[in-house]
Amino acid sequence: MAEVEMEIDSVRPALHKNERVVNLKEKAGKRYLPIYIGLSQSDMVVTATNLENRWLAERFRCEFSLFGTDLCRSKIESVIINQFENNVFYAKLVVSNYGKPREVDCPLAKAIALALVRKARIFVDEAVLNEAATPVKT
Image 1 (cartoon, rainbow, N blue to C red):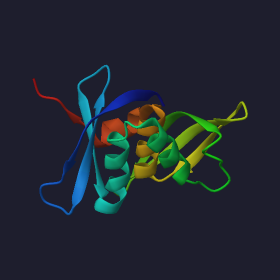
Image 2 (image 1 turned 30 degrees about the vertical axis):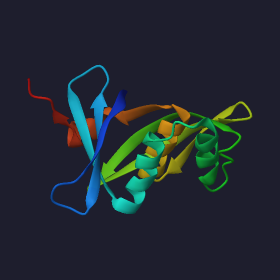
Image 3 (image 1 turned 30 degrees about the horizontal axis):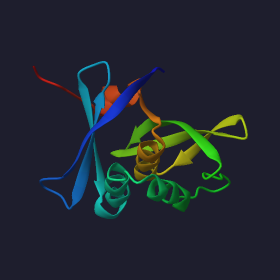
C-alpha cells in the first residue's frame, strides 16, 4: 500500500489522559493523525523537538540503541508508521548502515524522536491513515 508523508504539527498534553498527543499532519493533504503516547515516552519527543545545540543533538541520537543496529553510524532515511492494531501504532526505521539499507522495528516514540533529531522524513501507510486519521474541517 502507498505511504503518505507527514510532518509533526504539535506535541500537546492530552486533555483527558495522563499522556501527550503527537499530531502528525499530512504534508500534501488535509488529514491529521493524533498519536497518544505516555509521558515517559513523550519526553523523548519533547526533548528532540527542543534540541538546537548540535553537540547535544549528536549525543542524544547516540543514546538510543536498537538490537543489532548501530544508530551512531547509521543514516536514518525515514520512519514508517506501518500498522495500527488494537489502538497501538507500530513503526519501522529505514536505516542505511555502511551503504546497506534495511528496515528495523522501532518503538513509535523513539522513531519519532530519532526522525526529529536526524531530520528524517515521516511516512504513514495509507491503510493506517484510512483507519485512524481525522480530516481537517475547513
